[in-house]
Amino acid sequence: MDLKFRKAERSDVILIAQLADSIWRKYYITIITMEQIEYMLDFMYSPASLSKQMDEGHEFTLVYSKEKPIGYISINTVDGKNYFLHKFYIEVEDQGKGIGSELFIHVLEQMPNAESIELCVNRENFKTVNFYFKHGFVIKKIINQDIGAGYYMNDFVMVKMI
Image 1: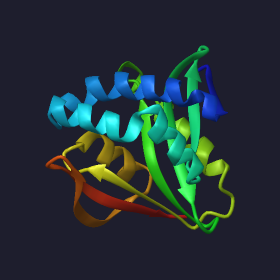
Image 2: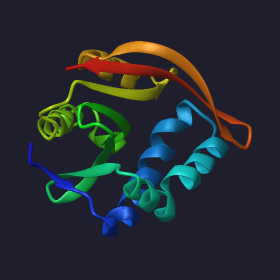
Image 3: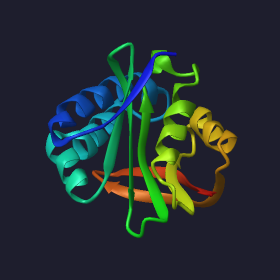
């Protein structure tokens, strides 16, 4: 596999927004409504929102296959030991090829002092929940988070101890 990983910069927010738009519209339509997809894309993936996330310490890494951007991951920490994985997406047509695993390993290598990684994943997103199980995550708790406009994120909070 010809994969390259690159730390995203502020100038990449439009690229990240475009990737999110492509991935979310194809992938999440079987899990949530198109209206909720539209709301969440605007809420979490507008260039202004992505810039704000970067200001708050979220580090984005882009993944490329044969020079084409196909995904991204976003993670942050407040203490250099415990991390939160906010975003982890690969283009639908590139899923199931081991790319997510390679990206995850790459990100772990950038966190030599990590003790834990926590994340939220939609409870109906069975494929992704199983991906995280495969990588050593366990379910910590269940949450129903109000994100506004009558929408909720019905998630598992998962954690991996390192």
